[in-house]
Image 1 (cartoon, rainbow, N blue to C red):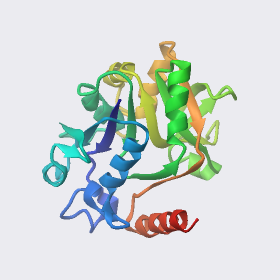
Image 2: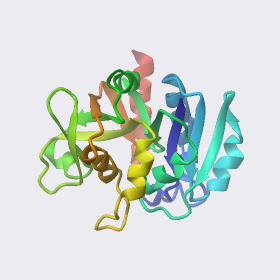
Image 3: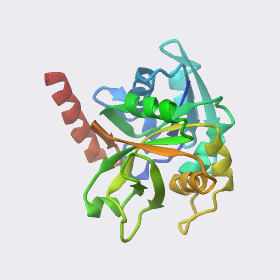
Length: 240
């Protein structure tokens, strides 16, 4: 199974740390963010890593080379950062069969294997890791609606009036159909190709999409202050 990491963004909110390096090489707890991502994906059974690179992508290639801990690493370039669906469309040309995807700024200690298992058990085309959050938080990200039994009925990106408080947490399992959906996705009002829109196209075409609720935690490292938060959470995991 392939594991895709989206790591093309410039990371402007991480400045000044990203002024001279890509966000994926910013260290958290003594390791680059991408190393955390790679280790997470290997823990769920990935046997090849596909990394979407853009801003200072050659730095990432130089750092990791062609393999990580004996696992092959392939790189796909996203020269223009036009949204997650656009990034995933680039990656879809390099993957084969079922694959998992993790946002490159996401540090997780969570039940990701449960999402992979649900994906396989239900023959879904997409399976999303989701978390129940406050309404205020739901207004800032992709919101998921379900039938109450884990089957997804819709997705909305950053709604003003959230119909649900379930949000995506940056980890997904996909079948190749998502690549076709990404290619058909139209740009949003902010000019980006949004992943929730691509998954919504799968739903419209009759594909099964599942959701697994988060147990544990996933934390996006979006700003320098998030580094301290994640390091504290990681230290708590060690102390237990």
